[in-house]
Length: 274
Image (tube, rainbow, N blue to C red; front, side, top):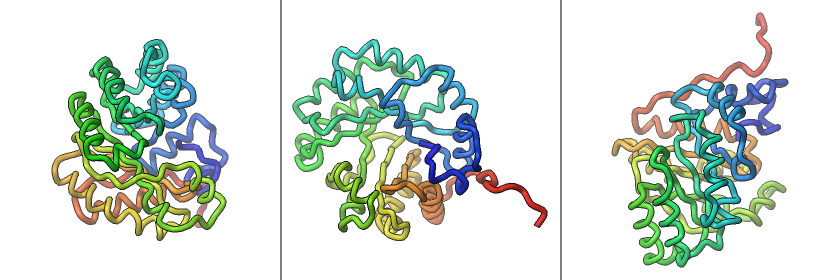
């Protein structure tokens, strides 16, 4: 996501052509969730445009198409998977990880299916799995089963931390909508690889969002000291302040451990003499 309407004129210049918005976004953040690939596989030309708008160190975490993960549930999906892998090839190393988000009905009994799927994937990419069945978080045996499969494949487990969001009743339309759609699962903070990925959902109130991510500031700083290379995505129900919040999180981590500064955003308004 790099083209939210509410960002235009605030974080991105307005008007700005659609094929220039990712370039402007990359001045705020150096990674993006590729959620649109869940709904449709882009053309190679589109993906080449993404590569052309970003530097070589920019990170895409791209979600596998839903036909692979939700409709076929990782079985008999070779054609759709090949089309996706071919489409994203222009990104090269910018494709930081391929994100396998599984439906909430994907249970511990289905882990052997995931195991077979991961073993057949090309080694050219890194993979990260997001599960939403409660048993993986509440039953140590189920968690251990999944961790074993992921470890064997060198794949990461993506936690989606919604604990701060669900800590108090919703107070806005966006929060009420998210309240019915987002997963309510226990917190998980363990990394399996040297490239952990965290998804965090706060509140529409920026201060409450920052209060809720404090545990992650320490965890991410610790990962960096260990030599890991984490990627963190900051969300709120309306995402109106997400780019600024992401930079704020980054600065809080930088206060604890030495990491490079984020790039300087492009000016949003027109240049003036005063």
